Image (cartoon, rainbow, N blue to C red; front, top):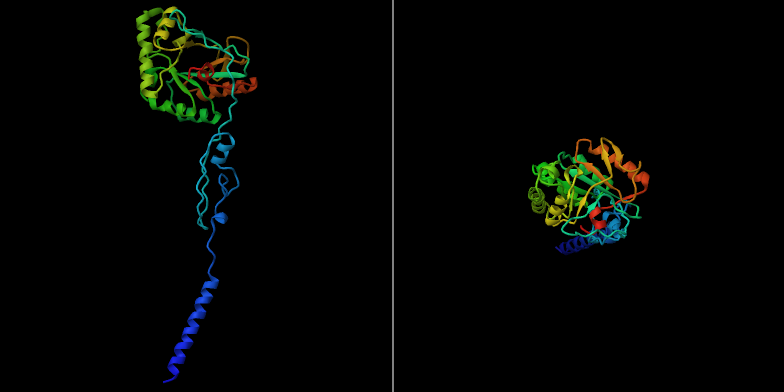
Length: 293
């Protein structure tokens, strides 16, 4: 019977030996510094959106460092690279409302290399329009007509998110309103769009574009009475896939360019882009330059 304790002792020694061997073979825990890329630099080595934002001067939140699962494959996140716009100090003071009449602006007298894109009406609405404006990173003044957009006003909020602003192009788009309507009728139509734009887009327009471009003293008075700062016309436009100029044959600094939400939007925008790049001008938001955003 003395052999039994010896067997138990031998089994105990063997168990301790096996436990020590298992501990020695266990893989060390993965550390955070080994598994996690540096903040702002994904595993691919390309700068992340946070790093690009910080490099451009926009504060970005640094993601928390956590241990990554060794078998996980990072999924790239699509990002839209925004142009770093140059900052231009305006060299034009917007004329004030005088004697109850809003000023009329056809072109900005400036030495800055800037051009202003304006898009009218709102009859045609396609995803391509939103995509192209985002791709080119163009801010624009959108002179919308209530009757053209009220069926789908939300569509134009995508342009707002890109940095464009909604302005007033009347309720009815009556191109003969100057000749046919009294001051009060014009004011009612203009004010109707003011209210609609404020309700739908959260901002009361500060600029007005007359349908067809015609204006009068009565219209200037109605625009001022509706609380807007100026009537905006143009001397250059993108139309039918080409550029048309009232003066000269190319874009000039300070030009206000007219476009429309029409089926040929892509061709018109391409024509404008070619002219803008050829002239070496920066597309700047008109409201920002005039200080009425």
